Length: 143
Image (tube, rainbow, N blue to C red):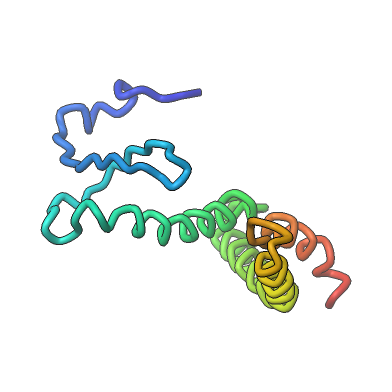
């Protein structure tokens, strides 16, 4: 169920200062960014498009960590079970990264070669959600 501002009475009278930045993406789509970086002398408008692209990989990593690995889903209610679940998920994500690294390098190499020969336009990447799912399903068999 969606929440409204009325569900948060403690912040109703709080002033929140932010900076809105309108960007035009390479696809010619217009995007509005909201940031707490208020000082335009420190980070001028022109730098936000590049900063946004750096942030995208971090956002995707958080999504993989929180949503795909279900880091906030625990099998028990005790402190020990929560810790075990958390560290097991971190272990699975690290194992996935180790197992998928050689494949990812191969995919990048083949993708770049195809781009150079004008066979395709975009760079391919591995599907991290699928890789994580496969790693979870084979972990017991590995050990």
